[in-house]
Amino acid sequence: MMRSSLSFAVRTRMPRIEIPMTLLSISRNALLESIRQPVFVVLLIAGELALALNLSLAAFTFGEDDKLLVDLGLSTLLLAGLLSAAFTAASVLANEIEKRTVLTVVSKPVSRATVVLGKFLGVCGALAVGQWTLSSVFLLTVRHGVAADARTDIAFDMPVIVVSTLFFGLAAVYAGLANYLYRRPFPSVFTVSTAVAATAAVVTTWCIEPSWRFQNPSREWNPQLMFALAMVFEAVLVLAAVAMAASTRLGQTATFFVSLGFLLAGLVGEYFVGQFADTESLPNAVRNLTGLFVLIVPNLQYFWAADALTQGHPITPFYFYTVSAYASFMIAGIMSLAVLLFQRRDVG
Image (cartoon, rainbow, N blue to C red; front, side, top):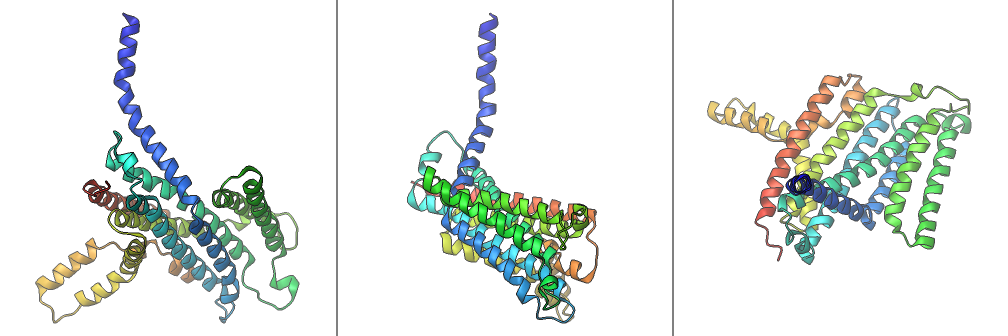
């Protein structure tokens, strides 16, 4: 009697465990597939080089070098996140729909909502690894700063250069040896090893002064900069949700342009619509409708903290939590639309 009741309890509990495990399996496969894409590695390397190049570009100002460096760095992170989100989302869903490989998943007792959410979580994991690496490189450039003098001992932060070269070189060598000796995919190994190397480089350089003396790493900690990086990553997750929704119906190129259009509309849409709403010659009904449209249209300016950092306006924890909640609602709404679009998508 006890054995039968135990088997009944196991049978009744299995469906509750099956859905999370299926979602986890789809997410894991999407994550691995994303970081194995050569385009993901190309965008990661291009972002790192662009962040390093910002040190030279920011030197052509008069007294505003460090502020421009922060502005350029956050812009590079947002642009790299947009490209990675668009191409990664298209590769894990749109390409599978075109090649009919997604049919092997939806033909099983797995709901289409689980497929879409699993793919999205996997893409978010890949973007988190990429943005973590680029954010670490950005912190290294901020620590290095723009060259203020032609003298080598002042113009260059040698601990940053030496430590970064060492760790990133080891990451590249490890990825190459893992691919050559054990036939592991180079893109995925390089992505993970670079993330570890970037983290180690930041921690190490924070413990060393430019004069090669040990220091308290908390001296390099800037909460305002961390808030700005976190909000840029939240904007990238919103763009990933848009790319995932677009990839349920469109191809890779169209998905990219939809994501780019959403980004541009989110950054400048409120300004132009607001200017139109403030026109006094418009009827009150039209102005009220336009004002409602401003409230409904997603505003990505909330995630952009570069102006606040460069102008000395503090980013409060309350503002950060409010923006995070706003991002969560946006992602939930866009992913609900993605599920609806994929429900009636012909994949056979």
